[in-house]
Each structure stands twice: as structure tokens, then as C-alpha cells.
Amino acid sequence: MLNSRCSDILKLIANSSVPITIKDIALKFKISSRSIRYDLDRIDEYLKEINLNPLVRKPNEGISIDLRQDENKRLLNLMESINSYDYVMSQKERIIYIIYKLLEKNSYLTINSLAENMFVSRGTINNDLKEVRKLLEGNNIKLQSEKSKGIKAIGDEKDLRKVVSNLMLENVADSDLIGVNFKKLFKDMDIEFIGNVIKTAEDQLESTLSDYSFNNLLIHIAIAIKRIELAKDIVMDENELKNLSKTCEFSIASAMAKMLEDRYDIKIPKSEIGYMTIHLLGSNVMLKEEKNDNLVYIQLISATLISEVGKRTKYNFEADEHLLEGLIQHIRPMIYRLKHEVSINNPLLGEIIYKYKEVFTLVEESLIFLEKDLNAEISKEEIGYITLHFMASLERIKNLNKIKPRVLVVCATGAGTSKFVSIKLKSIFDINIIDTVSSHDIERIAKREPIDLIITTIPISIIGIRCILVSPFLTEKNISELSLFFSKYSQALDDIENKKEFESEKSFSKCFNEDDEYYNMNLESKRSVIKKYTKYS
Image 1 (cartoon, rainbow, N blue to C red):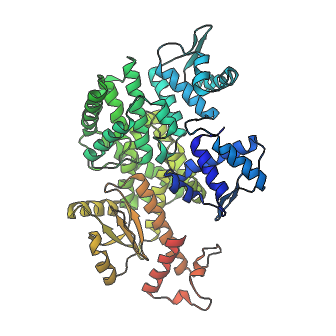
Image 2: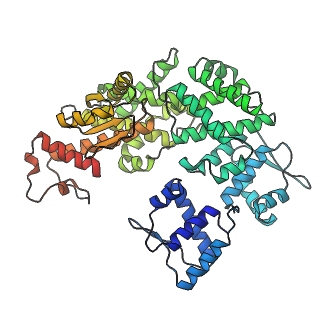
Image 3: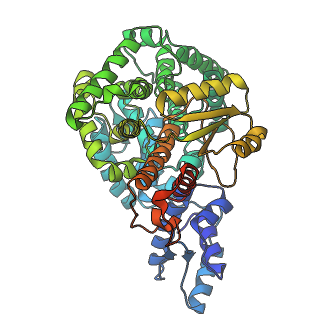
């Protein structure tokens, strides 16, 4: 059986005379492409169950279905029979639901109630419970079972919340968190209100959380409210709480707590505010100097890491004044994440490991000292971000006497913000910022002089010039996207200087006619080629 959205997607594909792209389907249903891919996998499972061929997926063309006329008619009839309110969960969704229900109740949970709520048999639930037990035990939680009573989760409050939060976060698309599954679990809670509370906190922080961090905090708060209503408070070390209470993020978390208390008629303990603070601290880059000893510790860690990677690579990273600042900005929130087991998403991880595997491995080895100091394992996602900082540094070292990319900074909130963004950019990247302007001045500047890249805090699109949208405070995602652009820029410049030709489909040589002598190009011609390369590669 399919849920209603999968049914609608399948009807759309079956009724179309041409293949439909995932992007077009995502736009129609207003969800992420990743969610659509999950739905397509579920549709394939359903087609297999009813003895029909799976979907035909062709890269660069789209999704279609190859059925005989009678098969197509049978399929459409089945689609019409699906009630739009039905939602049949996969096993993974049932596992999340079971664990959530264990967290939602103080009393025992019966197998019959689970089977009835999820429209499956007791046998199916018993099979699911084997996986639930395995998952909980891997997180130091015991699944207690008593005849005639049912099941109950026994363990530390922090561990129980963590396993539920991680499960939910792992199994939702970034832009589709508040969807069918989430609403079903938190049907008695105003999720939109919680989202607005977080947005208010973003305004006070003068920063924007990534989708992943936003969703992580939203899930954390929703679970916390449920547990507080059951008088299940979480405990935090008093010294840690005392240190957290000195931060501006704690004040913002306290204001969030007051809004939630008023809305849900609960009292949020100080320790809960502490954990919300940790999420805020773990989501932000450092925007200004800290007024405590933490900054000295972070500077020491960053300098030690630079030294360790330098020993392994034989590069003098100490000569790069931008690297230390960039690492400090990442390591400060990373330490909060490591200490309190807050995960981070890195959508570029696969590409980073593929392109920079050797440096990634050396950075991983160099971070062992910090893992020992913090008694925590540093995730590959964190290592990936740090690797990008070192790759950007390598490019700066190699290109000290080469052409710097000419960057135009565009802001809509005044000269103060423009200057702030420019300072942050120059502290991390070796670039030539030609001007900082508002959006209506772009055309005037572009006519006056060449621009390699526009970095903007507002959504804009300029024909012939790459535009990268950033937060005024440069998130890790922003820094990563800019690092990849500048890396491609440097690569294109190297290939011009070394008179090389690329072998790939989007090769450097493809930018020219066969009789072009590109190694005799003047500066402006070189910029033209670099622009093509960084735009299309």
C-alpha cells in the first residue's frame, strides 16, 4: 500500500507521455528532491508487490513507467482506491514511531495498541521490536518487557532523548521535516510555533541556522516539551551550566524558554535551557572575540592542528595568516558539538573525500590529539569541513604571486553589514574585493571593471557572472561553497599557466576553438576562460 503522496506521484508519472524529472516532481509537490527519491524507492517496492515493472529512471531525461495498456489501466484503478488519509509506514518509520511512543509514555506500551495504530499485525510488530531492542541496546537503553503489561524503555534520560532525536533527524529530508510523519508523531503540538520561536532566536543572534541545525533544534525542543510534561527532566553538570549561563546564547535560549512556557503552560528547568544553548552555540561560527579563556584554548588547538598537519604534509601552513582565523571559526562550535554529542551535516563530504582524500586522511590523523583531549570521536563530517580550510590554505600558499579572484560583495542592509562581510571574507580567503555595493549598483560596477564572482547576502541572478548567496555571518556551508569555487578558479589559472588541456567532458580545452593559442592570452582573456571554467565545472 502507498501513502497518498506516493500515489499522486505515481499517477503523475503514469499519466505523462514524456519522462518527468525529479526536480519537476519536487517543485510540484513543494518538497526536496531527496524526499522524492525516497518516494520513488517506495513506489518501486509497491510496483514489485503488485507484479508490475519498476519505474524507468534515465539520467538527464527523467522518470517514466513502461507498462502495457491493460497494466496501466489496472494501476490507475488501484491508485484511485487509495484513501488520501491512509498512510502505511515502512519498517523504518514504524521503528521511529515505536521508539517515540516509548518516549511519550511513562506507562507500559502494549503490542496490540501499536498494531492498531499502525494498521499492521502483531507479528509485524514483534519483528519490528527485534530491531527496536537492538537499536536501544546500542544506545545504553533496555527494552523491558512484561507479560500482560507490554514494553517500556529503561535508561538514562539523555540517552533516550538522543536516540529518538537522531532517528528522526536521520530519516527526514532537510526541507521536508514538518511533513506527514513528524506531524503524526507531534499531532498535539504546534510545530509551527516552535519553528517561529527558533526564527526569533535567529534574529537575536543576527545569524541564520543551517536547515540541519534548525531541524535538529526543532526536534530537540519538541521532545523536551513532551518529556517535561511527563516530569522527565534532563540533568546537566552544574559547572558546565554555570559556564553556559555566561554566554549571550544562554540569554537567547532563556527568552525562547519563556515563549515556550507561556504557550505550553510548563516550567522549563535551567538544565533544559542549557541544552538549548548548546544547540545554538554548536550551530554558529564565532562572530566576535569571546571575553573568556575559551578563545585562548581554541587558538591553541587551532595552532596545534596547523602544526600537526604541517609536519605531515611538509607545507608551511604557519605562513598563511588566513588559516588560523578560519579554523578558529570552525573549532569553537565544533567543541560544543563534540562535548554534547550534537551531530552536524556535511552535504559536501563525499566530494571532499573523493577530491582531497590524501589531505583528508592527514587531517584526520592530525586531530587525534584533540580527540584524546576531549575524550570524543571527531566525525568525518567535521573532518571534511576542516579539510576544506586546509585545501583553501594550500591554494593561497601556491598562488601568492598569481591573479586573485575579483569579488564584488552585495548587501541590502547598508554599509556596516557590507564592511562586516568583506572583513570576514578577507580573513578566510585570499581575494581581491573590488567593491561592496547594493543590488542596484551591480550593473554600474560590472560595466566599469571585470568581476569573477559576486558574493551576495540577498538572492540575485546576473547573466554571465556566478553569484553565491551567503549569510552575513558566513556559515560553514557558505565557506565550503566558496572554497570549492576558489579551488576551481585556481585550478583553471594553473592550467592556463602550465598550458595544459583537460581530458574531461567539461575540459579547459573545450573552452577554445582548435586553432586558439590560449597560452599567449592576455590577462582579460585568461579571466574570460576562468569564468567559463568555474561556471560549468
